[in-house]
Length: 301
Image (cartoon, rainbow, N blue to C red; front, side, top):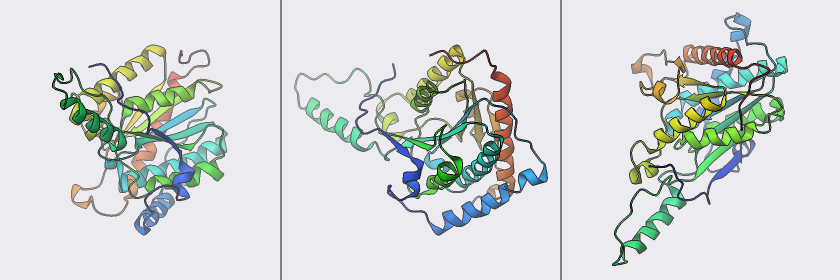
């Protein structure tokens, strides 16, 4: 089935600073704030320990964060902490970077699903209607998040805006293929080729979409987008957080970051070992991206 979209009328692009300032449903709980501060303090010790050096370079970097529900809690706290420290170091280096996120605007399809069901009910009342030949396509509203634009100030905009990703109820479903296409559109404004680093913990899932389309509908679209990226020379590197075995199929050759805590401790507070592992994984991803980027090569649009 060819990828298609039922409706884009309710898709959103929001600013991370709006999430932080409360222009969004949900709240930052005391647990969120305590965990974020604890994780941030732990990550901040890494450079002094001399464990990993941030790669030097002047090629722009773009980070794309999976903001799905499975990232809720400690996984997202870990991402926020690692990126806050990484952003500090990249700013000191003077290296351009951007941080984006992707999720859906609602659970259960929201307005697009309501519109589809209403139209379906009308169609089935028509005695000449013989059913649909294929599914309706993507059946939820996208929410793409600009946490820090390439030209925006890190300390004033990016660093504080990351905390907005911890808002309760903010993390929902993930539709990866369209998130990558949105990111690619932003690449058109880059002064020089930028490397893309995707931080995710699984495969694209949206229950509303998959309930009305083939089970591989989103995964196939992601595979098609990745194939186009490779053909056109777009430099992309995935960091897989505690990923399922299927993850390497979606993103080729990911940097794997496994949760080092015992499974019996999954409900415990942030563990610095996982933060260390993620920080190291992102640094390794930057090394890989830098090896692929050359002054004379870049994506074709």
